[in-house]
Figure (cartoon, rainbow, N blue to C red):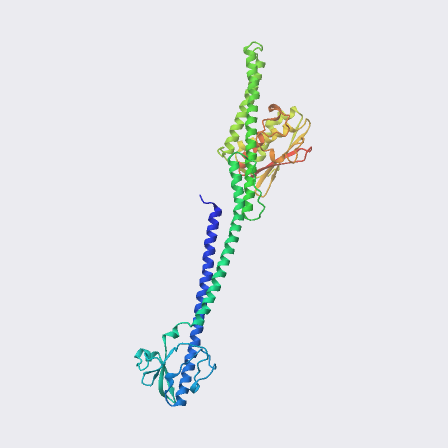
Length: 460
């Protein structure tokens, strides 16, 4: 399989060759056409000047006598020397073929002095293409350019050759420089991609520590940053997955171990199957059942398969019912629950059962982290397009580093807490999933040592 570098290089070389080829071809064609136009204008002036000179010769001589013995040079400029009768004469050391035919008034060729042409009569087409010569209104002859007038002279061809020999090497050198710079540029462009490929292969092999060092601010730099963010997210997710498996195993092992130990003790006759011993086993089954239910509910919420039955819901009434359900537990620890609820709180579009679970989990979390004699405040506030609920405790609070983690699975702020005293660490995760399933938002605020506030907002 051909690499991206090869493809870019091949494309760049092809474009460069086409560009340089056009830069050689177009100037050459334009130069030849412009030069040919210039030569044609010069030769038109030459023909006009020669016609005037021949008319002057005939006027001074009174006839075309001896005109066939003259060899003329007509460079397009007059004044290089004059021959008999005022015609421009042959310059010393210069030879140039005669490029005209001169016919008398009857159309018979009388010059140049080539036996093959002298005495021939011009054809009607040649007469139509010739320049009539006249003196005092009387036609005295015809001047016909020969086919040599349509070709470049040796000097003119040499000039065009020199132009071509200059354009081609310059274009070739420019092509070589462009290809060299293109190779360097494509190598630089594909360098970060090679790094990304190596890092991606490392991640595919299970090495989630792979990162790329791309410092450019262009699209490739953004791609490198996105890759690093993705790798960081994958590493974090893998760590959470491993922790989750370990935590689930630990959470399941604890009640199962207690149940197994008690049952074995009863079977072995160490414990009597009394109501108290059976109640202890039942308590562990309840804890185990609740953990399994939490895991199932969390899995459904994260998969987007949790059934949400929305209806206009009065949050104030829902808060009152939820507070009443935990009042007895709060009273055991002498904890006061303060409600700050406006009388005209608008309805929200929510599932009362699911939002009731959100409120219960937040109050349960606040009760677990509040000392005896503390107060918990539940406050509802109407916003522009939502209702916000805040649950504030007077516990130890959270460090700034802990705030992003409190909604993760199995996270406990106090590592010393057990399943019984501190929960499994799934309550807040379920809160986050349920609120987001209602298209709401959830967040936490805290100052270490001053309690914490957990808030959520639901659209009206």
